[in-house]
Amino acid sequence: MFTTNFFGDAIAKLQAARNTISNPTPILQQIAAQYQQQVERSFDREQDPDDNSPWADLTPATLRQKQLHYPGTKKLVRSGSGKRSVRVLVRGIAIWADMNETMQYHHTGTRKMPKRNFIPEKIDEDLVQGVVARVVFAILQ
Image (cartoon, rainbow, N blue to C red):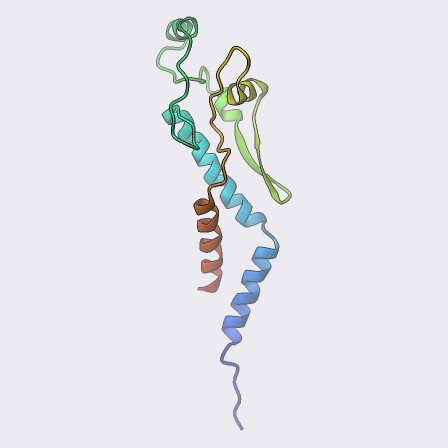
């Protein structure tokens, strides 16, 4: 009598997918990388990543100072150290944004300074589902 397991390979792949999902760190790292790219685009385009609205104009005094001392630089950028301080990280089972104190003020705004959002505040369901689908699909191949 001959017997075989027709589903052995499929079961092994499903178990691998389950193991990957039970340790979400690799998936979260890919999602964080996508959000980091959105941060970079926000600075490049000088716009809110959630609704693509342009950042508030600089005050005339700030604009004059920027043109005099930092010609050709974009809003929120002088040397680039503030922009480089913005990092999207995975900590445990959460995605966090980390930045220096000055960039926190720019991101949230103050009484005298308008908010210029450069970190997505809305969950992009399509982005998350796309990353999860790609990871699971790669395992099942």
